[in-house]
Length: 149
Image (cartoon, rainbow, N blue to C red; front, side, top):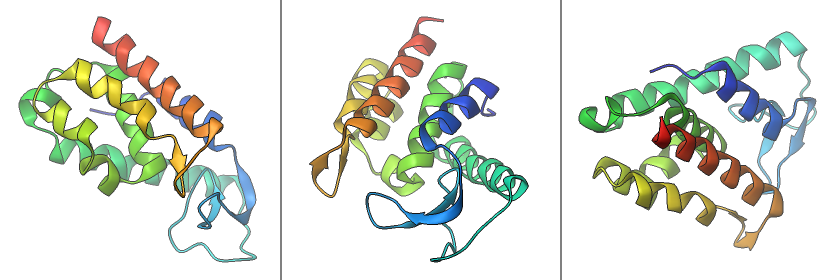
């Protein structure tokens, strides 16, 4: 499956775009639309570079989901469900997605149980973050919309 333009808009909305590196809430150096690989203090980028990193990072997550999700479950995913998973994996990392209860439940075919897991991922450094909860609820809504189609 491929990440949709609606999914890209979701990621862009929650990430925002910063052309000068900054430390995110967890202290990770970040630039562009949430790009973290190889980012260092004082780094700058162009909008074109930010866009290129965004699409590369999205593709990395989408490829992992396509490769690692139970093939029978992947075949059943609606676009909204896939988009929610990609945004979640983009924000938290593929490892966290694939080691989560959400992933385990989804791989077992429990779509409702998986959907219920999104809001549990609203913390940074052990503290609840309102912005993360908004994002998780948006992902959950996208996932549930996919369940209805």
